[in-house]
Amino acid sequence: MQFPYQLTAKGTYSLKNVRLETGFEYENDEVTGTKTNLFSIEIEDGKIKEIKANDPASNAIDAKGYLMLPLSGICTSIWTKHYMDFHGRHFHPKEGR
Image (cartoon, rainbow, N blue to C red):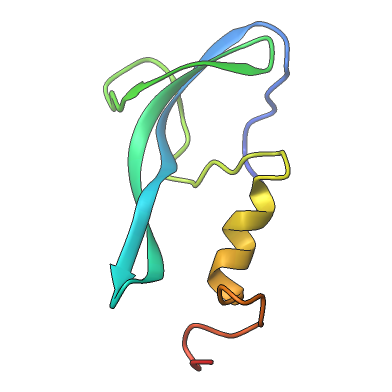
């Protein structure tokens, strides 16, 4: 699926209904999922300037609840926490260990 907007790194623009990770869900002291919430984000010259409470009525580009992922090395933790246990062994959450 292709995102319908062509955004550039220059200038200032705002996004609404952006899904961000806010924490973890635990079961028996083990991470079983990720908590998320919707936010509004202001971007200036390709960098996040402000993250604030979501304002669905604002005149901003609607991210439609898509999850915003970081573009740095932090991104690997998002993928590995779902498919690796704390000892670095691969597993599939629906199939168990």
